Image (cartoon, rainbow over all chains, first blue to last red; front, top):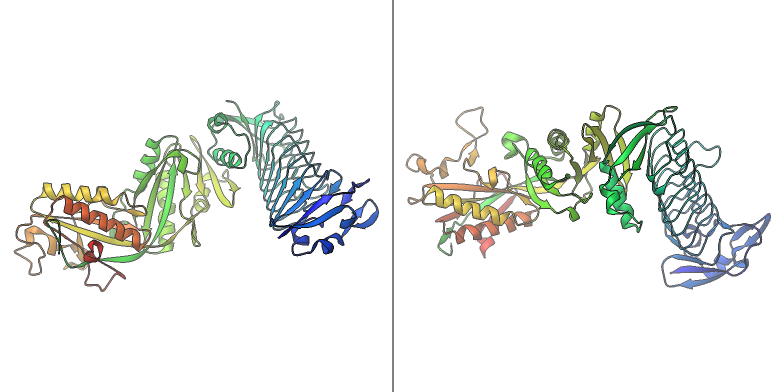
Length: 269
Length: 295
């Protein structure tokens, strides 16, 4: 049996609610959950000040309402499932290591920063810095999957070292900046300066502006592994077309100011 | 006992414990997947001389393969897991990686796994790339037509090797036709392979030899030409040809099912006798009685 949280009192300033996580709420009664501490601006408050909390039959945590000012939902979670029936604020699933988060609406900046495992699915758009490292960190996302069915902002996968980020639409500038490893698939177009400073890893896109001059064109070919990734994304509901499965991709190697072991694969038809 | 007009000899096939792996080979076309599979399963008839036994399990339509390309499922057997791992590296490296457009995936989910792509990756000379998707690790090895994609580890499991049928008849053409029919029926059983040429072996062997260097020699008891020369000949007077089908399977049930199908097909073809090879029950841990198969 899980809990259902419905936002009743909209926070006037951002509400930091990392307690909204299966790791913290599993096994609690609604009253116990409502007494957990949250941070409302510079004031301490309790979860029950903002949410109506009820028990439900489904073995998952459901959160309803406009949570665009609620930060850190699912932060650090390692198991279970959260379904957010609406939009959600920044730092969703920060440093999570397992479990699944599904957002029916759109998400703010910093989805899955420094994520270790599990899966985050955003049905709408996401903000900047999806799957990125926090400022000053040496390593960003290390594992797991972030699936954004809509668009995403700048710096997708900043300093990423593992896992998969997929964006259904276009993404902003600096995708894969300083990337160490891992895979970013953008089913729309990349912004400018994608892969800047990347050492290793793969950035795949269906469209792209001219790559940075520190990237070298290698060839136009069919990367065998890409079929596995695109088929996986199709199973997850992403709009992968047959022509993308069977198509040719330009391979650019870079970034030559670093190891030059990264790759930018751009669909050519 | 008789099955139709065919005598089913009251004996048993003596089978052995082995280790098996399933390899899924895909390619841009069925033709090239088959080319890789044929190469990989070549010279893999018997562990005695080839260190492993291998065969094509079945062709896979594109919708059944991991990358949705046409594929072939291959089963490879060896006497132990370590040896199986070595054979996988050798054969995938020399026969699949070399074949245009192919990729190679693990086809068995088992607890025990052996490193294959993790060793073949070094062919990439530092340019290889690891990818992890859905809990599985793969290696992308750059090759001259693009890249060779191979699973990092392959599942291996205990299996059964050496199930067999001996098909006896009055002449070579009728026995060959009956054996072909039996082999065709047995290939329909999932989880088995028939490692000899097109499933059939004529040089059945016994353990040992008068020559010290040989660990096996011709199965003189079933050589029709030696019926008057060896005391223990098992060849009836009206029999001039004996052919054998050897079966390796992922488990005992699969081997038994294949033997049952083969036995019935041979009887349908009207051969004189169906028997099985054994070593007196002293070597193999699985004794598959022919009478139990047709009961």
